[in-house]
Every structure is written in structure tokens, then in C-alpha cells.
Image 1: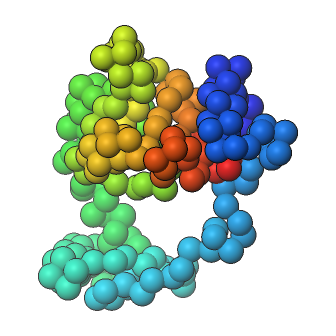
Image 2: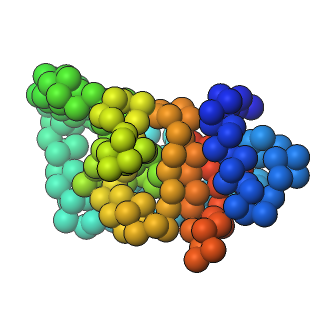
Length: 203
């Protein structure tokens, strides 16, 4: 269970009040979703699947042209490793080559963008997995006196930042990275349709 700080709990209580709920009417942090909602549908890949050596399947959703390029690359890895190589060894070879080529760039990027690195280079809006067009959002707006300290910033994608937060459809307040209260689906009366603490559904 998540134990909010007093400051975060105060934000949760305020948001619950806007929803017409009381803190006593529900647990401090409810489970993320129901059992049914946690079941992620299995989507077949667009162009094929790679069989792992352990007889499990790693499903990869790729466009046909990208799949063709990956398949050609894996075949080249098979040639490099020899006839006895299995597909998982070929993938490992490709990953090792990728790391050898780009590790220094990744370390450089982590040093230059500590906020993105802290947030795993992904939008922190609940339910979003976007890793493109990322912005640093000030939880307390700079126009309201918020500073550039890491605790006042969270990584959000351009869509949620510009079309959600800055249009008033989403409110995000608190302390990053582990004490952000998200009010999602803000209605005209100012109440939210969903309330999250980080990525945990509260109400």
C-alpha cells in the first residue's frame, strides 16, 4: 500500500472533496484497477513472431517493412554465430552490439537530461506509455512561483502537457516523482472523473 505524505494526503483530500467524496468513503489508495481491467488483451503481431529458445513467444508488433528489416538482420546474426545458433542468441548478439554502439550516448543523455532519466524517458501521466515528444512539466506553474527543482517537475508527453494540463482537462500537483496527485477528466464544475496518486487509481 502507498503511504502518502501529509502534503500529498492533503491534496488527495482536496481533490476528493471536489468529487463530492470523503476520504473515509474509500481506502487511501484503492487497487489500480479491477481484475478484469488488469487483463491485457493479447494482440497478434502484424507481420510475425520470434520464437524464443525456451518455447515461449516474444510477441513484437511491427509494420511489415520494419519486420522485414529485423528478420534480415537476425538472419545475418545467424550467419555470424553459425548453424547451431538459436534465435534468442541472435537477439542477444544484436542487443549487445546496440549497447556497445550507443551506451556512451545513453550515459551522455542521462547526464544531460536527469529529469527524463529519473522518469524512465516516459510520460508520467497515468496510463500513458508515450516516449516521444517529452516535456518537463512544472507541477506548480512558474507563473505561480514554482521553481525548476526536480521535485516540482515531471515528464509528460506533448499531448498530455498541451492538450490536457494546459487546457484544464488534467490537473497534476504535488511532489515528483512519488507524490503526484493527478486529477483526470476535469468537468466544468472543476471536479475530476478520476483521481490518481502517481499511477494508482484512488477514486
